[in-house]
Image (cartoon, rainbow, N blue to C red; front, side):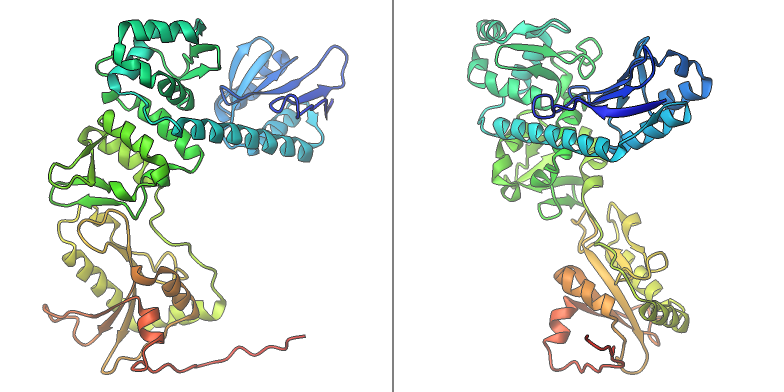
Length: 451
């Protein structure tokens, strides 16, 4: 049994592709449901799904679900890679799909179209100065809209204005917001709740809804898809206060384009202004777990690990063997003492054993208010006089990280002293290579012929 891609018509129907199975009375179609983010397999699937292993694979491994007797939905779990899994599964159970490369190209185009649509929706959303407040948004969701049934937008607008006078200036923004968050589906004429995303009966009532994470999860999920969370929260504007044990963001460092979203998060009490420092926006305490799982976990905390050559690796291992790692262990202990009381002390760690090519030995924090790793330490242990080897890899990382990169020069003969403090150099690339006090010698040269 063979299947062949045909009749794409992407200009007119960018989210549909058809796989025809050449067998009498049997046709398998592979379509895309953009709204639900699912591939839909339809056709003669009954016999195949009666196979216990096939049924388990499609339902459990591919996370699919049977819609009708001849329709099966598969989510976009891994973008175009899901198509390879579908192909492999169908082949395994008796259907061979040709033209996989073309199928993947179509899939990529589908996701590009979906992303462009999401970007357009976001840009339209950000044009609105007023996206409503908790009372207005929850009124639309819990009282104005009816689950399942489509409603005319003009009727919903009229009802909202008659029941809640303050909602008129923000109504359009609220509709854009809920559509972007994938909670409703709306066009110029109609609107309907997506019950798979939001069911009023399963969510807290109108007065309690925004104390749950549901709405914020929907909103940040869409922002994450577009790589936009960093415009709101990033390593430059986020801090952690060890005195209040709370995260806060410096308001003026949020991208100006996203001030509308910032203001929305303030109105919904996801953020609140610090009473003493108005520019500091505190994260509501009951959202701490969600904030850490959704925002903090997505912020890059360590630099990319660069490639290394065998000579540098060998030298690194030889140096570790020679000094036994005592200098690194001392530096790690010193950092733990320096940062005593830090809320994320478990993130002060020695990484050199696992990543010998990282270009530094310890990832740490610059101060007690840092909540992501922003001090990367290369430890050099010496005895008598300060002499150390600085590899090409380490220099490259130091040049890239600048003020976040530190050299800790540890005198191996003094580390047992309780009051010993190592020599610490911040931004050593600048301070060493641009300072004549430091003498640099080339130990070996790389020789090659340039043809």
